[in-house]
Image 1 (cartoon, helix red, strand yellow):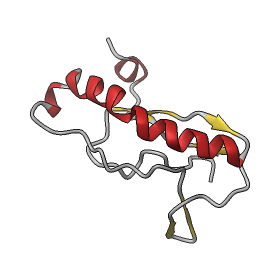
Image 2 (cartoon, rainbow, N blue to C red; image 1 turned 180 degrees about the horizontal axis):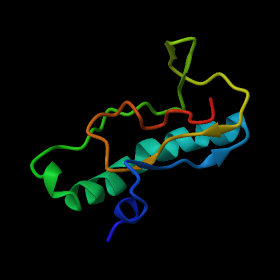
Image 3 (cartoon, rainbow, N blue to C red; image 1 turned 30 degrees about the horizontal axis):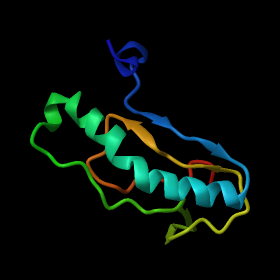
Image 4 (tube, rainbow, N blue to C red; image 1 turned 135 degrees about the vertical axis):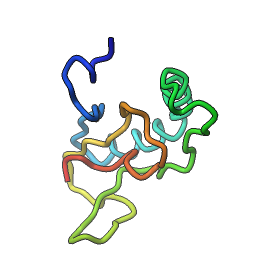
Length: 102
């Protein structure tokens, strides 16, 4: 039984909390290098995604919006809470690395 079914949550998002610009930049590199591992495993656990390819075109940085305008890299200052591991797994890259604290 999954956490989402037990809690009746539509979506769960793991967002590491980062306070500094240096932590933000390190996490951007980490997320780019490790995206495939958790996303591929998540797709394998969701039969409704069988045959689909996980997104690979994530932004390699923490990003956000300012007044409804996409800002490519969150200019700071922190804190930052980048949306990283998501359940159900995303079919597009838009949510990954979005700063949930912005």
